[in-house]
Image (tube, rainbow, N blue to C red; front, side, top):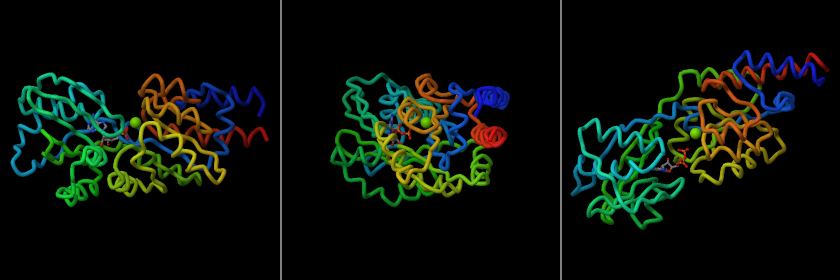
Length: 292
Ligand code: ADP
Ligand code: MG
């Protein structure tokens, strides 16, 4: 491609809401055959809400919510915001915890007054030695609805199963259909649990899912998706996504995402609307066709 056609192409992309930080990325995008997307904040709004809290025998709803919300006041995860907001909406006080500890991709722990409180994924509970099988059916039902099941442990006992749901962006289904129409495969990479990821993928007709990926595992997941030499674009918004944005053949960051994601990307979507990805790929195909 000539420098002029690339300039025209990137100018046109900017009008469509996609800022290319590197001109070559517009060319590379033409050869992409897989688009992998982060789930939370990319396919979804990234603003989950608490939908379920089922206390175990001997525990009580408000007590559990209050204790886990106190722990979550120290976390910046969107799940934490959902839980704190739910506690406040019920008028519960959420005192600051002590000895807070986050285990990335798994969960959080702290002391609240006299209590030892932990909250996170089933894998987190297993690591702590808690048997979650009593809640397996419930968690399965929650996951099948696309909700994220979490567990709380209080003073060494499993205290509740909790769920949050993150709405899918209104423009996402159309964007995925359009990617399919362009002949691309669509994949999702997420730290969320397998059942939830599978349910969301089914709703959106996503072709491939890599779930339960730890924060430092996204590049490996990406490389698995392109193992047969397919060129891959990755779309993400979070701090965790930065290495995958840099490692992808083309990295596209959500403009409303974190600074480090934007700095690691080849192009930035001005809004969170994934139809920008479709426009950029279509434009790339048209631009290169014109100059060959
Ligand atoms: P994603 O960005 O895809 O949600 P993360 O790596 O941030 O992936 O989180 C993966 C999982 O770890 C979450 O689905 C949740 O089960 C658990 N987790 C992480 N942080 C928290 C938190 N603050 N509170 C409860 N669970 C958490
Ligand atoms: Mg995200």
